[in-house]
Amino acid sequence: MSKKVVIGFSGGLDTSYCVKYFTDEKHYEVHSIIVNTGGFSKEELDQIEQHAKTLGVTSHTTVDATKSYYENIIKYLVFGNVLKNNILKYISIFIY
Image (cartoon, rainbow, N blue to C red; front, side, top):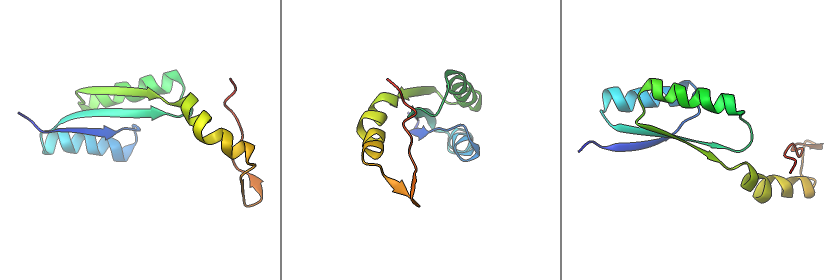
């Protein structure tokens, strides 16, 4: 029975290296996951999934946390007028 690992996968250099390291060097069964908080388009998420599979992951999961991220974090920053360097850092780009 092979060891298994789940990698939070962005598709960038670091996480791509981790997938190859664990699959090729350590012979782990690698599963990848990405949590979309609203910063990715459907096409980008599809490209990230395809990249993960090309690198050799056993499975890839995309979690859509856009609404919960807005409801539990972003809206309070906007409602609270949270400033960073006297500038409203977070603008509500999530319109429901």
